[in-house]
Length: 170
Ligand code: K2U
Ligand code: ZN
Image (cartoon, rainbow, N blue to C red; front, side, top):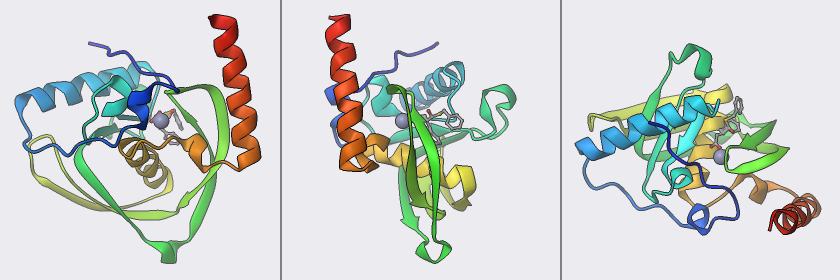
């Protein structure tokens, strides 16, 4: 079942998501629905706030919607940057920020600590696209969007374009 993805400037996207106290069947069912929604939207990551649930749950699969071979369901994820690995800069988009992509600087490598869908601990060190995706998704749990990392000028140009589109669609 595919869920509706909220779009910026929906206020739910700006809330700090609540920790999940227990990994229940309801959480597992929601995670499965999120993964299906992510794949159908041709995404490689999705955070629960994007489908209207302000809780600390993300799904990630950097193998992509065609292969679907690397699904991670992560509950209460925590990232520790590994600054000795430096930084990467790449173009990002967001399923909640329509028709816009921009370069964002991220840590090249992060250590992840979370629970999986069975409530078991997950600990790994990520680099490359997985590290970038994890930082993008955990940002969502903090009410942050990739546009928040842009320069003031680029951000103001984007917001002006968004206001114009919202006026035209009103
Ligand atoms: O959270 C989301 O909105 C899904 C994001 C995740 C993401 C953004 C930037 C960089 C990595 C992951 C994307 O819209 S998913 C679309 C996508 C697909 C392949 C590669 C990058 C982004
Ligand atoms: Zn996003």
